[in-house]
Length: 310
Ligand SMILES: Cc1cc2nc3c(=O)[nH]c(=O)nc-3n(C[C@H](O)[C@H](O)[C@H](O)COP(=O)(O)O)c2cc1C
Image (cartoon, rainbow, N blue to C red; front, side, top):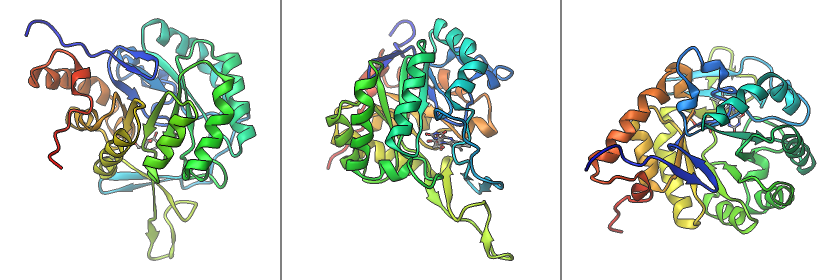
C-alpha cells in the first residue's frame, strides 16, 4: 500500500477529516487547549452543553478522582448560548474554516428549554456543522438523563427539535436502554447517536458518612468505563443503522480503534484531556498507523469490522 490511508468519515452528514472528536464538557470550546496543541487537527469538537439562559451548576465539591477515572457533578454549569457565542463564536468559526467541524450541544430541563437552546444556536451559530442533544446528563434534577432514559422520553425531545433545524442532529445517549432509545431516536429523524454519557456512581467519605461530592451520586467517566462503553456502542450498532460516535474512557489509539471495530464512525476523547491535554494529538497518528496495520487504505472499511462468531 502506498501513501496515507483515508481517515475522513461522515457522521450523519458531518464531514470529518478524521474520526477524532471531543466529548462535551471536557474540552471547553477548544480555545482553552491552544497552549497544548492545535485543535484544528481534530475531525470535530463538541462544545460544552449550553442552555438558553446561563446555569450555575451544582455546588462544590463537584469532582472526585477514582483509581481509574473521575466522578463529576458539574450539573451543566454553562454561560448560556449567548455567552458561549459572544466569547468563542469567532474562534469556533475559525475552527470550521480550518476544516475542524464544530458541534454545539443543547441542554434543557424540559422540552421547552431544549427548544429555546436550539433556537438560539440556530440564530447565533450559523457556522456550526451539527447539533448534539444531551438527553443523558445524570447530574441535573430534571431533564438530562431523566429524558433520555426511556425510548418515549428521548423520542419526545427529538420530535420537538427535528423540525427546528436542518443541521445534523446527534443524540447523546445515557448508558441505559440503549437499543430501544437508539431505535426511537432513529424513528424520529435523528442523524447520529453519541454514546455514552457518564455512568452514575457514588463515593462516600466513611468518616463523615457524606458524599464526596455535593449530590449523593455523580457521573463516572474515564478508563474505568471504557469496556462498558464499547459494549453499548456494539449494542447500538446492532440496533440501528445510524452512525455512532463512541465515547467513554478513550486514552489511546487502541481504545479509539475498539470503538470503530464495535461500530463507531467517530470517537470522542473526554476525561483523558483533563490529565493528558495532548491526548488527541498523540492518538491521531497512532490511529492512522493502526489502519495501515490492518491492511486497508480507508478507515471506513474498519467501522463495525469486529469479528464475532456468535
Ligand atoms: C467534567 C466533565 C464535564 C462534562 N460535561 C458534559 C456536558 O456538558 N455535556 C455532556 O453531554 N457530557 C458531559 N460530560 C460527559 C462527557 O462528555 C463524556 O460523555 C463522558 O465523560 C465519558 O467520556 P470519557 O470517559 O472519555 O470522559 C462531562 C464529563 C466530565 C468529566
